[in-house]
Length: 324
Ligand SMILES: [Zn+2]
Image (cartoon, rainbow, N blue to C red; front, top):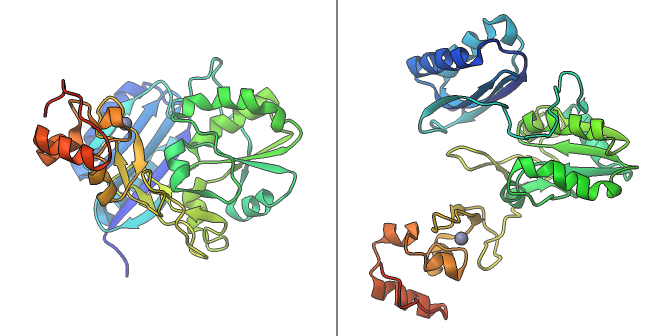
């Protein structure tokens, strides 16, 4: 059954004159048509994910395609039951994805080979190839390609250093990289080419999103789900043989439910069932559980005594100085 809403994912590296004015104009337009989401604009291009009723997303796509610069803008479209965002943000940034290279590069000048889903599937099964997931640790944990290397980073800008530290393993291999919609890999694969890390560099064109929708690959060789940066949290990718690989942070059982650690100073993203989140007072560690500003405890409205009792049930003690 067809749904009434759409989520759009898109980017383009292209010179934008007066990006700050363009940011203001776009924010006004997007709000006026009832679009929601997050758009980043910079001198180097645009990167967005937006959602709305189909007539609204169509208006937005027409609006973008009417501009010469964006007449070929590629929107990856996913149907949805509702808005996937609460608000509309359009922001000016120095980069459309924050990689912060010491020496920046233009992916229109230097980047890895763009491989379409079918070619990417063939390439990643080549024994002479290493497959690197360029996303963050919490994204990898929920789902990834079979056999992909997890750099275990918490932010994209940590990836160049990780590549430098591990480059000996990749020097004489073909290297393939992938990310959600493709934008992160544009500069990252360019960096690999520039640094000579790997003998041939390929990137998944259109990202995992495109791979999952492709009628030939149908998400084949993807394990688990794909993490997305909106209200949906995760979306299915593999339509051939779907699986669950996410594991509950507390007991390792299969789990695809994301929560943030209740300690506002930690905020760690983890997978946890409702039961375990409650059992462990919403905290990823003892220190986080007994943090005086634990948001999970605040939301539950538990008294100091109740917190102490709940901690005792998991063999922990509430420090005498902490009160709720
Ligand atoms: Zn924590």
